Image (cartoon, rainbow, N blue to C red; front, top):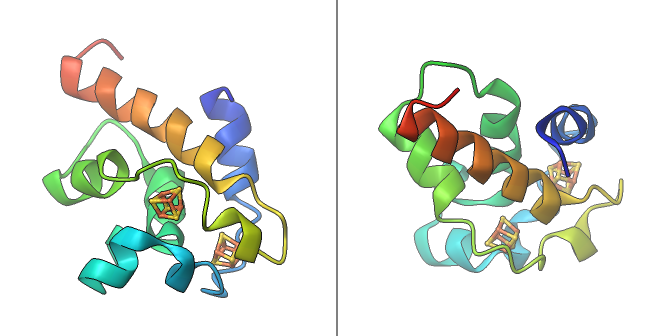
Length: 96
Ligand code: SF4
Ligand code: SF4
């Protein structure tokens, strides 16, 4: 998924949180930015100013897709986050 598509998909998130407890990193750490709802929100806000918290949030997604089965809107969360990882990698490398 291209980043433009990912941002469009992420913009549909209703912040309901139904996805969170399916996420292994959220269950382990219990902080919003280490779960799918937080990651999707951070993906929506990615711009040229990348904080270490935002980078860690996106880059620690396991891309397992467990969250997707819980999303009532059927958002392709893992695909959104794969695109966000590519964006974060480019930002860290200074190539964007
Ligand atoms: S794809 Fe990422 S956000 Fe979704 S459940 Fe797996 S680790 Fe969590
Ligand atoms: S379940 Fe779907 S709509 Fe709800 S917070 Fe998670 S990604 Fe957003």
